[in-house]
Image 1 (cartoon, helix red, strand yellow):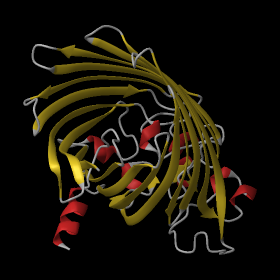
Image 2: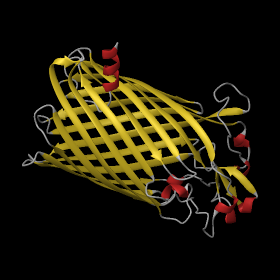
Image 3: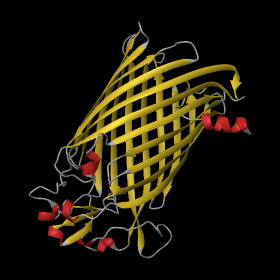
Image 4: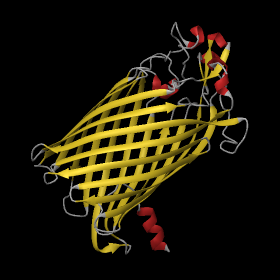
Length: 407
């Protein structure tokens, strides 16, 4: 029994390449937003397995959970009229399965996943086709997924003007046939094309294009916005259609003399809500021992900046929601739709071992990693929603522990 428990604790982390029968991994992450009066803590355990049934057919299974607790303001408006933050807790579970078939240089994958929480349910179908060409120097891939999501909301809201729609105050009774509640639908179509190319013995590059179409209810049912001097306190109202596109370029350079890898990423994004963003990242990974057991260390720095949605208004602006009312039919209390920038600094250490007699009689190879990310968000408008999260020495801290085993 002790060996089984130890094996379970060590099944944490990033997947290694499947060999013989397959591999298994899991992870545990702790995400903290330490803003006073606006805290958020997310604990995320996960586990998955990849099993080779034959030389050409393999199967995947995964499980992930988010356990969320915190306190956040429920109403967006002038600070002197906003009440204290509301405590909340939530648990989300996601399970997924997939089948993968390989024929010569082609790999086809199809999968399904289901996510469930007290006020949100999701079904996702996905397919991926990959071609490994020119002795692995060129890899082309295309993927598509469709999500069928449902959001809990108060019933009969669609018959009211947007300024009269009220927020959901709790998730009790959602998806149970309660006549006072309803299910709002959200459809999500995502497509991606990628090209990975070896450019020289030291250089490799990746180019990725992605597109996403969302239709349906995209507001947070709990958030409230103060309108027209307090004449209305209404559930936030977002457009029901959103198209999003992004292009990402990555290059990696191998520093052969020290066996290190230097990386640079650049991502451009734009959507039909008026948000444009630029993300740049630099990374470096250095192995300190080549023979197993081996150690690798990596560091990264990422910068991000975005414009605000065309219907976002800061509470201090002359045309704020509180002073002028909605922008057309829309108003938001979502910090992610405000102009903002952030800086992320991260570090990771990975240990990789090999044992001919197998670890705990199960695994030939074991990888274990620990990571830490620090994030600081900078508001580009005086008083965006959740402004407390932009104050202090850190906006978010992410700690992670992971390991993988090949069997």
